[in-house]
Picture 1: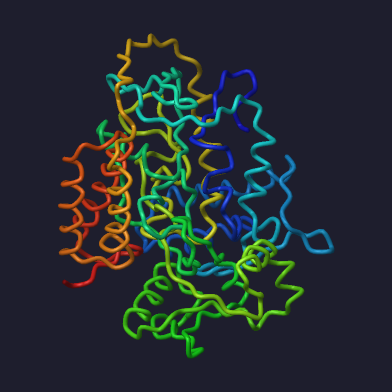
Picture 2: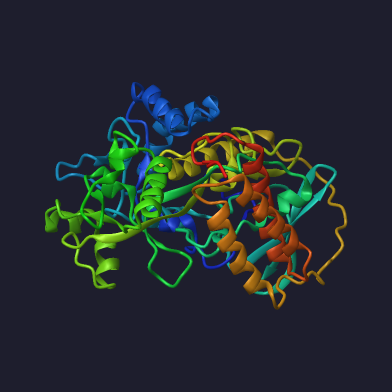
Length: 464
């Protein structure tokens, strides 16, 4: 959207364009309400991130929202409004005030994704699976990919990575099936630094009783509006873990549910019975419809929940312009990036805002630099690189189980070492390129978790 039509731009995606995390985002987009709200938004973000955040990045996130939010609204993005025409704001866990705007009730990501697609003036190419970055002497010259399963080399003066997080590494996750940490794995191989990889965020309220790896998210906005987390006896047990109960930050709520289930053997539920039916259906139309298809009648029925992997707080290390240290012509934005904006735990609904703010900054930086003539070196055509091998699927399932059990919500040194050995063992088998990349990323997460012996934010260590 920010790149002028005069530039030669190719947007590539691994699968179909809407098979991505933005499309599945429910809750909304945080935005500073005004100048006065910026310090409060910053302090809420820092507190949720256990003060591990880079404060400069957080201030940029909040302050720039005063410019980017009106800009996308002016360009035609329609957020939900009250009858008098004013935009509706909601509050989510760990926010001091209602500052989250939403669209389609609980379909903000879907609406934003559609809006961005319509705004895109450049060529969009689907079914493009990137399996290598063309890097020589500290400069990126493009990518190697399969396009409709055909090996292809794509050269570019600048490459912007916006490939999302690492969700498919985990047995239970809320992510799109395409989000499998391939690009992070290439970075490990190329010596590009990954940062804060121990800080993996788990969403507390997910319906996991489905056969697919991607589980059904029950947005934080439900608790923001007043839904309760109860056990099978109807007890609101989260107050034992934090005085804010359901409205504590995600890491605390996820651990509370996980520990309560482990300690008591009781199932946890999300209870909506306090809501009026008509209002609920209007505010949460997608959740109402999706769960009606599964036989639930909301808001009357309560639904069983479990935490599931949701968001990578860490990622490819970059500055506040998306530039990757020591690398020319390569940028990273969104969940794939680590600017330090989320610290040890992301504040709810800061992710869509991060995408908008830092995409704009990366483009501004790229355009300000002006065009440089570069001579592209010859890269050998290594198309013998086999992406999949026959045992990959069973290894992949094992990896997901290990990630969930040993590198999940609660970790122990013993479990992390066992996971490390298993990943190392898998790497020494006959495996395809894509599994190799997943294992590279899994290794980076384990190494980061082992290096941080104290608990912080979403990284929680329990004594062996």
